[in-house]
Image 1: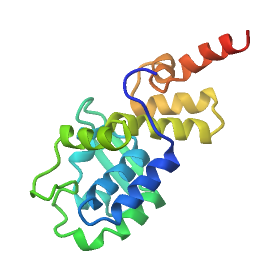
Image 2: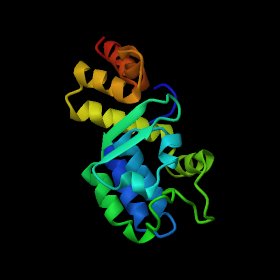
Image 3: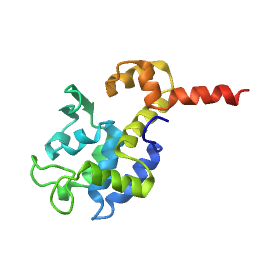
Length: 176
């Protein structure tokens, strides 16, 4: 697989929900749930404010590409937010704030994820992609849609990104 590894979607949800039961780790649990359900880069997630997740859709401009994102807020995120209501104060307050009162850094999130599960924030983005791909029949049409979601320039990039091309190559050798 290219770059960071990924984990199964259900495992990520389980981890996120388990962390949400720990007051000191609750915000990290919400981060994991949002990461595997939106498929956004860490920079875009860390900029989220409570007001961004009120309603039915998440709309933002990607930090890296400047492209507009419009994602439906699904029941996994809504359920996590329902358990997070006490922490929500002002609508313009950032969500992913540490106990020190500052927004988590990319390094802190990645260090936590790596120390606990051997993954990175980018691995959670890939977990989203793998889940969407596998739960929708592992077909080329889904890869095209994922390419649009990830803003990839080609189907080959999306396949390589998700580790699908390498699996296809491995399958050739396994069939020998």
